[in-house]
Image 1: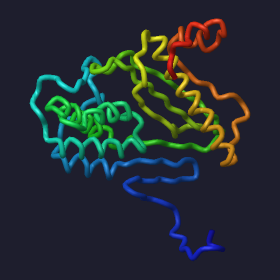
Image 2 (image 1 turned 180 degrees about the vertical axis):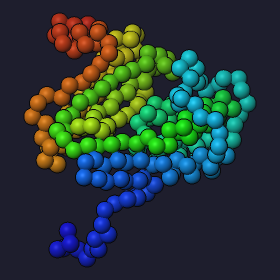
Image 3 (image 1 turned 120 degrees about the vertical axis):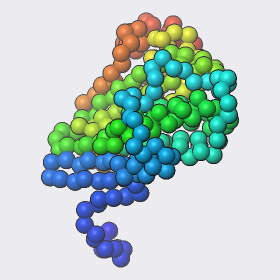
Length: 242
C-alpha cells in the first residue's frame, strides 16, 4: 500500500480503539483490559466484590418484574459498554444481548443484573482471545435455550466458531418464532450456525485460508442431530421457521 499511498510504518500494533494487542512469535492475544477497567470505574464499581458467572442461571428477566424504574440513561450506557466489550469477550455475549432487550424503561432488577455482569468482568479482566500459530481449521458450536424469554416465550440461538486456537465469530440472537420443543429450538440454532459457517468458508477462501475439509457443527441435542442427519425427519420439520 505504501507504493500507492503516503503512509508511515509505526511498527507492531499494540492498541486500537480500546483493544489491546499482544504479539509474539508464537501467538497474538487480543484483550480490552484497559477499557474494561475504565468502564468499571465509570459506574462506581472499582474495588467491588467479583462474581464467577455473569448471570444467575435460575434467574429470568422480563419487561415488567414489579420493581421500580431505573435510570434509563445510565442503563443504556452500561449496556452499550458491555456490547463493545463483546469484541473480545464472547463469554458475555449472551448476557449483553439479553440486557439490550430492556433498553426502554429498565427496572431496578435489570440494572442490578447489568452491574452483576460488570462485577464478573472485574474478576476476569485478563480474559481475551489468543490465536496460536498452527493449522487453522474452522469448527462451529451451537446451542439454544428453550423459551428463555419470559415476555414472548421465544428461544435464543447462540453459535461460536473457532479458527485454530481462538474464537473469532460468535452471536446470540433471539429466534423469530416460538419453538414448540427443545429439539426445534436447537434445530433452528444449528440452521443459523450452518448459514454462518457457509459464509465464513467463503470469506476465508478469499483470505487464502480455504477450508478443504467439511466444517463440523457441534450440537448437544440428539433429536436435532437426528433431524439433520436423517432425511425422513425433514417432512416432520416443515413447520419450523429458520
